[in-house]
Picture 1 (tube, helix red, strand yellow):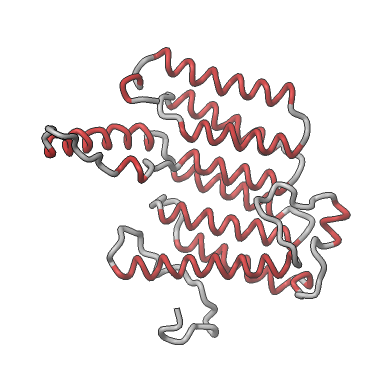
Picture 2 (cartoon, one colour; picture 1 turned 180 degrees about the vertical axis):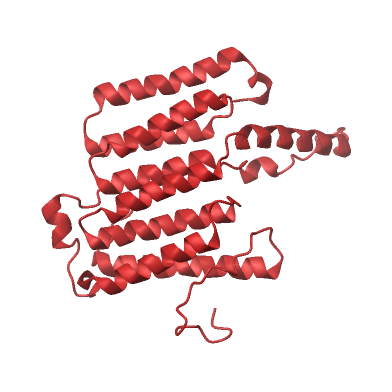
Length: 278
């Protein structure tokens, strides 16, 4: 909401009612499981963008998002809605809003800079007012539980990798509840899962038979590979580790304002890359 209207009670009432009505449409008219997942993501995105809601109203709507997510038919949908809900509890001002506008002709540059700084502080307070690291961690744990309960082990590991990426994002955004140990435990879980299932033979078909039999083929994923799912998931995991390595390098350089990634272990003890490899 525009800052000029932020403290208007009618605006909060309208924003709250809008999302309540969206839930009414969801509950009364959407029965297809895939459409339910997509609708919930839209509602979560709308709530995430809000800046006018009181703590009580925000918590009420966020709780409804989580409740509906837990009732979805498919475990992958439950997991993805749970980690989407985690973002409701750790928001940051968009980078685009941090960039000061150029002064117009005749404007005092210093005055424009001061006004921009004040606006950024107001907007940052509005965006971050509901941040709660413990709630972030709780939703990620729910997502992990849903992912672990999938019948298809390959699909479970794919969701684990998605959770690894989500956790790395929260850590990068300085959510203190997400620690290097938490991320290391996820990496170890993925490695153990990969080593412990035969489905990761590169010759195995995709999707695996368990997924096909159980009707849990991953229809809500943003991307479905043409080749074997197991090979795709392994490559996805490697790319995720490469991203974390890149953040470690940037943080170590001191050129960017990033948290310390040095305690996150991307390599097995016996698989350390040669010096200068990355």
